[in-house]
Image (cartoon, rainbow, N blue to C red; front, side, top):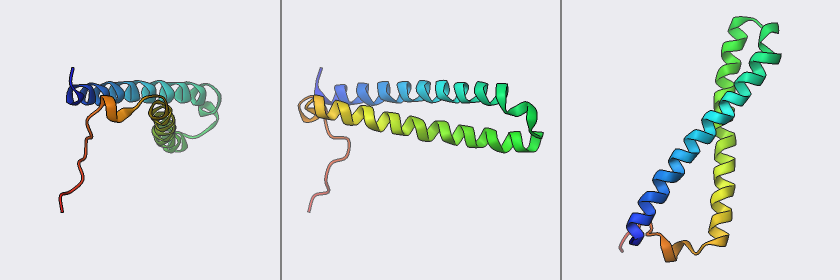
Length: 91
């Protein structure tokens, strides 16, 4: 395969894994919240906390994704296998 195909497959694979990890983190946070905290709070507060849990899952997923890609960048020569997604502007 060429660099462009490698890049497309990497981006698609990373996106799918990122979404799966985000859903897993959200489900874990949701179950923990629902099991231990939600019965003691009002429905309005529970709705707000559910939004906070969703945003928290997105942030945690971003941190994990950022660290994994940083690790891969250190271990693999990205220029050798992947085509740049954004090219510098011509002057």
